[in-house]
Length: 182
Image (cartoon, rainbow, N blue to C red; front, side, top):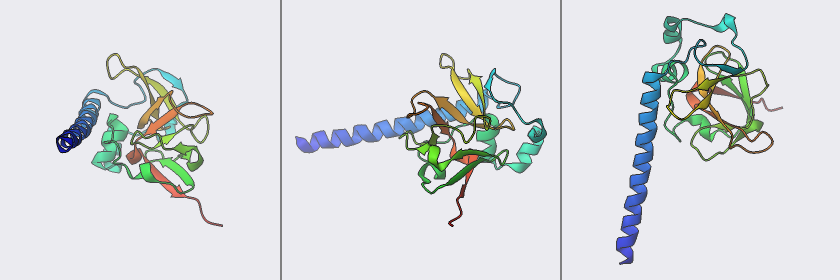
């Protein structure tokens, strides 16, 4: 009897994991097809775009890989636990792929358990642009963008002290530069 119960628990766990992955992929596809991440959309809550770094859609397509384009310009979402920066633990600085500007420090990163790199604050108050995101009906969120209008992720109110914020970012939208050893 115990073997049967254990077998059912394993099957249920596998089913839940598959269901979660399916949901993440479905949301990513929905977000990619229904939301364009351009500076003109949504009410800006804080920050401002650097007009000298804004590019046309054609320029972005030349500069970014298809996966980067999906995340940064079409507001896609990575599958949880798939991004390489989720597991980065060295001291250093995280930069936006779109603008090549510093956005977070390793000291601000924490393990949220969500599957995406999470930070409790940006590197400076003006490093990011926050705007309203109503792309999912009945689920208003706050989108996080870099200064050139590229989608990085979202911010939530379930982070640690001192800010109690969780900047939930896509790994593919950032790159990491480790501190030089002295």
